[in-house]
Structure formats: structure tokens, C-alpha cells
Image (tube, rainbow, N blue to C red; front, top):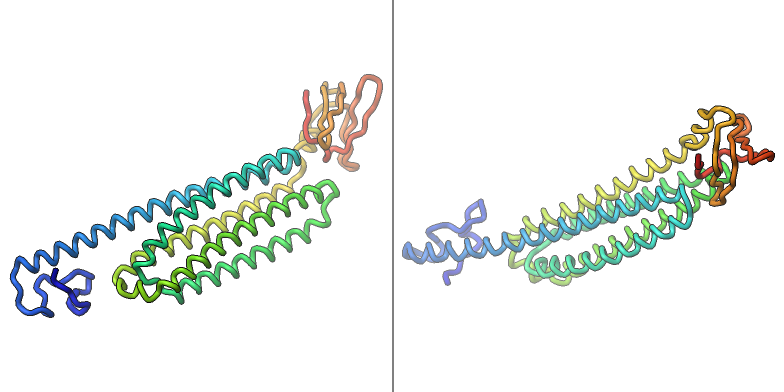
Length: 297
């Protein structure tokens, strides 16, 4: 095989057809060298395509995970029991994500051992993500402080939501820990990947794409948290429903803080006191309208 020096490559990263570094060789030798380089680049493109497919699968799993977390938060408005059930499902998806991420990390490590990564840029991205995570935590603490003035019933729900946010923080910390482990591996094989410097640019683009996906996922978490905060600020849906019901409207039973209360008719609603009055046979029942979790007509 004919060796090609780095000075014999053109600006586009392809070997010169007639290699000046080895004198005047025959046309067949030049074509043989060119074909070997083309085969090498084709193998590299296949490896990169496989890596892109693995990253896409991982991103798809991360999107599924984010959807499950969002469903878990919405379930907090209904019952603690449903919240715990969804939290267990999130744990199962987290295990699947960790196993998938571990397999993807091994494949990335095998390719990274042949390539050089710009360490300074990677560390800069990591520090920026750490700052973003700290900023997100500060915003969550401010939101938690501002919600302390809310009604007693919503305070309990806010505590449950805070536990979920802590879980997200731990989940993100595990992601950063995995990135640190990859960075340590890059440092250990830095001397080896210097021999394939021409292949680094393609890998850098894939790593930056993975970082951008992580940034987008963090931004999506922030937007969904804001949606939940806006939801808590809205008026209780059953308060709005009670305002529209006429007096003596037939009602079968109520759900109040998980307890079933049998009634027969809706009497009236007092928005100034936040109370609703129902009738059960000859007995009048006064219910805090914001504690009502469900109405069966």
C-alpha cells in the first residue's frame, strides 16, 4: 500500500491523484491508493450513519421520557395514588433510558478512540450547561417561595410537585455524570486519536448535535414547568362549573379530597366565601368548592 503524507492532501480532504511526495508513480498505483482511501471514507461514513441512528433512537427515548414526566405532573391534580403510580412508570422508563444510554456510550467510545475531540470546546459546553442547570434550580426555588402564599390545599400539591422537580434535577445530574465519564475517556485516549485528526470534524458535529438536543430538552422542561405554574394560577374548574349550575340542580355525589359524599341536589354557590351548598334528603351540606375533585350528576 502506498503511504500518503498529510501534505499530499488537497483542501477538500481527498488525496491528490498524482502523489508528489513519492515521486512519479504509475497511474495504476495512484488509482489503487485513491480507491483504498475511498473505501476507508465509505467505512467511516457507515460508522457515522450507525452512530447518527443510535443518537436518533436515544433522542426518541428521551422524548418519550419527557412525555411521561409531563403526564406524571398533571396527575398530581387528581390524586396522590395516581401520582405514585405514574412515578413508578417513570422509574421503569428511566431504567430503559439508562440501559440504552449505556449501550450508546459504548458505541461512541469505540469510535472516539480513533478520533480527536476538541477538549476545550467540550468543557466550555459542559460549564454552560452546568450554569443553565443552576439557573433552572434558582428559578424553581423562586417559584416555590412565591407559591407559599397560596391556599392551604394548593400548598400540599405544590410540595408533591417539588418532589418531582427534585427527581428531574437528579436525572439531569446523572446525565452530566455520564458526560463527565465520556470526557474522562476522551482524555485517556487523546494521544491515540491525534493520528486521525482529519476525522474529528464529523464526530464533533455529532457531539454538538447531542448537546443541542440536551439543551432543547432542558428548555422543554422549563416550558412545561411554566405551563404547570400557569395551570395552578387558573381558577379551579369546578368553581367555574358551580357558577353555571341553576338552583336545585340534581347531583348524585361529590368527590372531596378523595372522599365520596352522597348528595341529591345543588342548592347554590357563594363565590365570596368559596362555599357551595348541596342537599342530601333533608340535610344541607356546606362544601368548600375548591376542594371538590369531581361531581357525578
